[in-house]
Image (cartoon, rainbow, N blue to C red):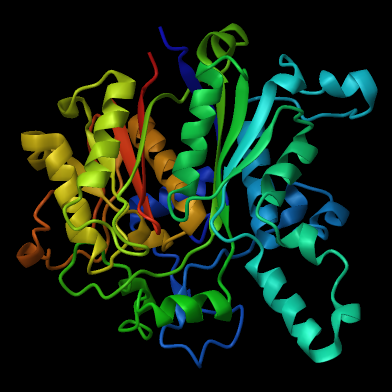
Length: 428
């Protein structure tokens, strides 16, 4: 018998809301967070829009002195983790010295609580600014904290320090599947009995001229809708022309089910299954057949002990690129068979943009909310489904639908052929 894993806390920083209630309300209203870039002068780029986090106040979650020692991707991660921690009804540590630090987390031993964060790129903004100073003034003028702020593992490390968590702190890097794989790894750690609780999710803050320029050179970003940015991310639509870069973080508190029940925790849902595979096909493109992603779905279903027809909602990777959307549709059809025609499928990237390493985390969080609230979020801007490319499923176009969801799944497909799928089910 596998140990069951409860989801007891949720936290979000995103372009459509810096807390879970605001984020969910925006999804239900079809609100877009995509707008002209304000972080830098994007006039040299073919794509000049992004899903930037707005009105973020790090001081709500950490000391200002601590925040100055973090890159934005770390700040977003810590903020989402503190939100989730508080949401789970857990006490924040007061004493981190000696033996007291081991018990600073209330009912759990701090050494039995871990952190697993997905991240695709790390502190790219820090790298860009420090490299500029290197070229202009030499290595002696580079900021002393360049390396500690830049490296991708610092987000998980900062969460552990902020909450006093003394179990392992891991960073999962599998491109756009990073957040999904991080939560899957956390599931395995609890099931294996290595940990009792894991703070898990994903984070990203790479809206820089360097990153956007690189994606433009790959011809991956949307360039047609600079004047109407809220229309730019349009998964499965015939007029889609690329993804829109987003940023933010999402974190879940995962606990051993029996221990969560024993402490009287509110349980949102059960994290029931995880599947992963690699296409072994292409560096940046998914296998057009969708077979790699289909395999990940099947593995997740087997892991959860569920049948295809048990899944009521599927949050698609749905990037709004010409290549991804048809391949993912084939993947869904192959894994779900006839049930694919009845399945509610949507892409919340149509509102948040593509949050890279944070995408899988925020999208499984949306699945949890769909189960709890009985509504599934829409795919916005779906005006003309690309039937010629085989995009003919029920993508919940342009308005949420009220649906009783017993179990939901989310997929993430990353550069390098990484495929990850998570399944959540109603708490029982």
